[in-house]
Image 1 (tube, rainbow, N blue to C red):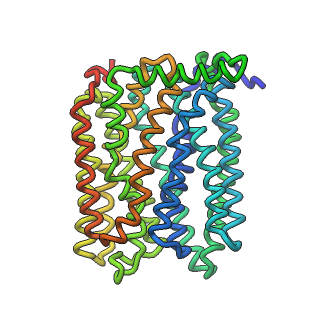
Image 2: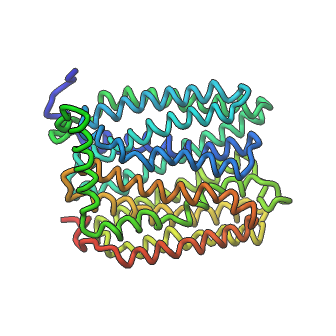
Image 3: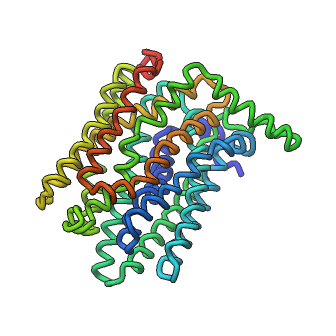
Length: 431
């Protein structure tokens, strides 16, 4: 149904939808990759199992290019956005219902998988909608805003909701019941997102379904054309290496940072409670992420991505050293621990802007912008999934201190990959 004036729908300010869209995009990802790790750790699952099975949740983001042509061809990106938000909400509600029951680990993983596949499909549509709905300058300007609100999802996920879970654990004395309530709240939040975007998203003239194939053979031929065009792009090999290696260290750090904070000191951890973890990563950490993301967007839109690329790479990788310090010094001062994490998160927010803006740049000159952007995010997810799967085992073999040294060593290949990237010096500059 068409609601309101059509012209206003086509030209609605990005401020009405970019922040909410990427806030909604970030929540399922942080739930799958981080919140689930904290929850399973609190429910007694081992580091090896946590890292292995939650890393498998990356798979939908890895293989989403395989069905990205479906989003490209059938229905509008706008439709896929709010439809997937409804399904994500249903999956989160199912997690809430099954946490207290027997065999919760396998059953909740199943619903996390449903959430992850729906979220990956949502990402394809949302990222395509972003490219179609904004001109190149606005894409560069809003990259910081979009990343900021994507990371702001951490405030809800690993921040406020983790703090709430910790508080509920104390009040109820039942860890499973506490986390069940948290996921029920998330489910309600996604129902609100879906209804809001159903009415508020604009209708860009370019957001139209592709030509549907007359039969299966034609459909696969169209899909092959999309993939063929991507792998024929100039500079494809350096681009893929960059996507796989830029976050090689972080892919392993992400899985073990929270368990390191939660584990007992006898096991090399810092023995912090659930509420403190929520504050460190979800309040102070998010504030620093926001600052870093905004600064990254401003820098790229002012001087261009190419000028800031190496500085952003340094910013995202070098601060990983704070975990080496924490695991060696084992401080019990909460402010020292918080300050170290804040520094790492500031660098991450600034450095991640380069990653996102490069994918926009590489997809920009393509006839299949949505699908090609999705293919790149698939490579990005693969670069997170494979190292993450073995990170728990590596940590248990090396211990936390040597594991964090290993993480820092793993940042080196990302720097090597930067040398071979070719980026237009004018891309992202304010015109």
